[in-house]
Length: 248
Image 1: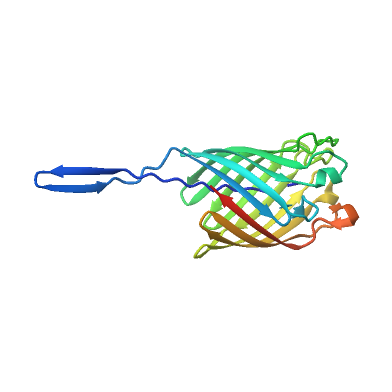
Image 2: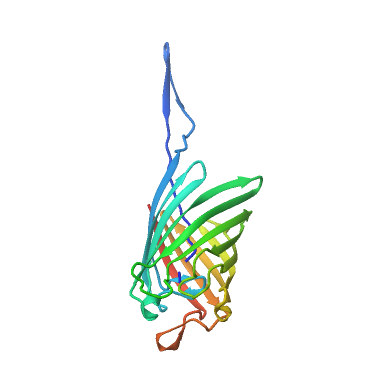
């Protein structure tokens, strides 16, 4: 299984005009022009890839990377990838996860909204049912808090007859100033017709932005012991996850 994603994009443009008059010269700066679109790339490393609280990498480090395109109209698309181990541990043959997504963001008064579709692809995973999963999602943001619901339109990450599973989560992004942030989170995964694998996850993450690099340290865990790896490792056990991401 895999980790909800967010993208960061930055661009700026300035236009300077000069006005000349007899015996004097004046310079005036025009307002910054916002581009119609933004394109960004990111690369990172984590000590454990946790998705919805469950380790995807057998509690081992991995590399991750992505790209995002956002239009001023509110439409966006993106792609993100990470190394994984859980499919091979489950008898499949894929060591990479590739996420493709697109949607629309906007605001109504003080409330922001985000709707879209996300597909998780595991090339040549060879699991039956396939691990490939597609979800539609909708989110509402008020102040620092975001409430989001994701609904699977396919089987969920290889669980048989699990179409229609859902994940509801509440996350806050709190700006502490001077580049510091605090991100508390709680979510509940329902696996349809596989209730033994439904669970609640939680995390509390501290972030520090240093120019284009964001460092993070988070306490991540779940209330389930149903997800195990080789050696009977509990993949949902509470742990500290460290990460670093560079956006350009």
